[in-house]
Length: 445
Image 1 (cartoon, rainbow, N blue to C red):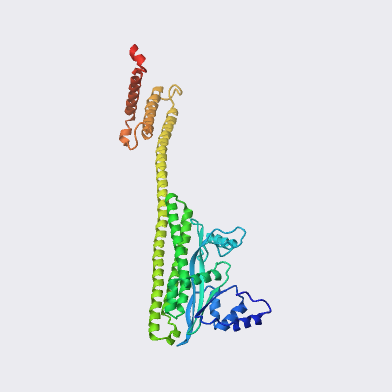
Image 2: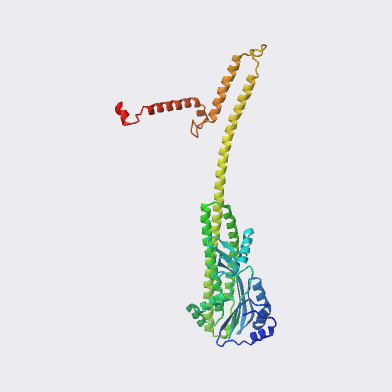
């Protein structure tokens, strides 16, 4: 329906009221989009629709209720639920609407920037692996069930931050479903218009299935990234995905309650048909609703499995970070041990220096005639102390002489080991010199 022009409210009202319904039409489907407030009021007055249906759709308030039930005549049921869908993440840079998307580039990019700043479960979730985004969509349907003529109204409010499915797209999907052999057989066997409502619900279910499949592939991609790299940015992305995933799980539970509501809400207009037709139609409705519930259970099972995969990937990130921290701590410990050994050697050197200062501070007879010390006493103290200091320092710094893991007692014998190493080196060098360089040298010899 087009938007009402200013000053032509009465003409639009007369056109809505006096439009004749086509004959032999069991269910009439209306897809509303881009309507002004006065037009919504006219439609509400014509079809006896409560204003809460329009307000709940505009404010994205989940609802499911039955109103005005009359035995043998019919009732009104309203279904408003939020579901998840996957969209192409590539948008035009000029902000115009893309053929593969339902919203402009500027709006989505603004929300994605907001998502990077804080965890907003209502915002689109970007899947970098597939260049797609997961966005929330709205299914708002009001079904008027009558014994003679029924009407199903689908409202598609225009939202700046949520790309709602276009009315023309949903109309084509419902039309293709009605042309299938499976649904034609159901419509032929049952006069209940509730089965038309189930085709709308199947549209949301297909969107759920596709979106969760893309999310699972993205989680697997992140898992391979975590194994190959240890980037902490991946941990932040995993936290954002987990927050969205928890919100998606609650939406799935609400989806299941909606299907159960359709299953248990009996159509009062079916009292006007025969008992056999009522029983067959009721069994058929229960079967179709059970099929939907089984598919929702499958999605919930896959969602729980994805949640476990997310936990596993997050634990893998923390384990990798802990392993790296442990390696760094080990390296720092080894460096600290080396520094402590060097400090001990430096302390011994300081002791040697202090001892030398004490020795040089001695007054000997050659310098001060009145003292008792001699130059021989100086060498008797300085030479042994110097040799002992060198011995201790080399003992703690003898990695070039002994392999790692050698005991301290063995290292104290480094002078002997050093002499043996020099002797082996000299013997090996002499043997190399005795080897002839060519066959000519061998013949000359």
